Each structure stands twice: as structure tokens, then as C-alpha cells.
Amino acid sequence: MPRLGFAVSCSLLPFGFGLSIVLVLLLEWLRPDLIPFELGTFWYVEQPVWTAFTDSLLLAWPPMAAGLLLTLIKLPPHRQLQRQLAWGDVPPPGRVITLGPFQLIFHSALEEVLFRWLLFYAAIAGAVIADFVVLGFAGLHPIPWIFNEVLIPVTDFATAGRLHEVLTTAPWAVAAAILTSNGRFRNSHTYQGLIGWIWSWYLGMFLFLVLFEHGLVAAIAVHIAYNLATLLLHVAITGVLPRILIE
Image (cartoon, rainbow, N blue to C red; front, top):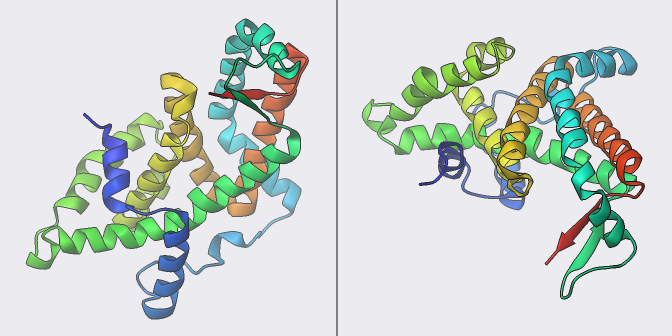
């Protein structure tokens, strides 16, 4: 049985990065009213950059602290393996990918642009279209009902009300798009195991909170800061840069 979040993600956002760009640009041209944000809405920084960054860290600290704690717990048993991979002791036919600071900065920024902007915008349109196709044209609206009565309240409870205003004051399609895009973000971290899969969902939700409070640039900065902190912790424990073994 597929996870609920994955099923919702697929139904409202059955396309990837490239098609999301095309869809968002087309809708901004043909139906600018369908997505209740302009392309640059979340790119504006309305307060001093450092203030926005520190305030964003305060917003996102719970999942960031949990992630660093998980790293601190999980890394020591893998210290020797990481060192072997760094020394070139790779079991055939595997290959190793080294994650340095520049790769982490690039991927952190890319993930935010993808999941907190383009796929988020595309998912808003996907929610509206899905509502119309699934009996909305007949005056019945099961998809908004599922989100308003089930998924949004459950998410509000799971996040201890920290995103209550974001989830409940905007049109339902915005909240649906947050959950949908964040489901994609979470599923992209399946390789981290069940705990990492759950944790990444929380991190993504709090990054959406940062997005709505301080904008996309702040979300990118927080994501980069977290990954660099994880990198430093990894080096402190193992003595080498992180390596991923691809078999």
C-alpha cells in the first residue's frame, strides 16, 4: 500500500521539475489568477538579511536540532566505513560520491528553488485542476474536503500548530500544495531510512514556515546552514568528508 503522502503527491503533482517550470510560466501568462502569488513574491527580502536569517533559524530550530542529534547518534558506527571509502576501499562494482561544501550549497539551494517555489506553485494549479476534474465540475468537491477536514488538521496537529496560520488562512489549494510539494521533498529522502523520511517531512514543513515568514532566500540560507552544520559534524566525527556508496 503506498504511503498516503506519496499518493497525494502523485495525484496533485504528477510531473517533475521541467514540466513544473513550463506549467507555472504558462499559467502566469494565460491564467495569472489561478496561482495567488506572483513569480517573485517569495524572492523579496523585506528586512535586513541577517535579521531575516537569524529569525528564520529560530523558526526552524526544532527539526534542525533533531537532525543534528540524529547525525550525532548515527554517525559513530559508520566512522570506519566512511574512512575506508575515503581511502578508496570501495567494494566492486560500487562507486563513491563525495559531498563537499560546494555540492551541499548547490543542492540545498536547488532543493529550495524546486520544492518551495516551482513545484509548490505547480501544485497549487494541480490542486485546482484536480478539484475540477474529480467531481468539482458537478458541484461536488471531495478533494478540498479531504484536505480541509482531514489532512490539514492532522498536519496542524503534527506540527504543534506552528504552521496553523499558513495552513488555514490561505485558500485550501495553497495548503494542499504545501503538503504535496513537501511530500515530494520527503520522498526524495527515502534513502535515509524511516526516521530520516519522517524527519525530512518536518524539516520541509518548517522550511515552508520560513518561506511564508521571511521568503525563499531565507529558506535557502537556512537549508544551506543546516547542511553545512551537518557536514562539520560529520568531519568532526569521522575525520573525512561524507561519502555515499553507489552500488
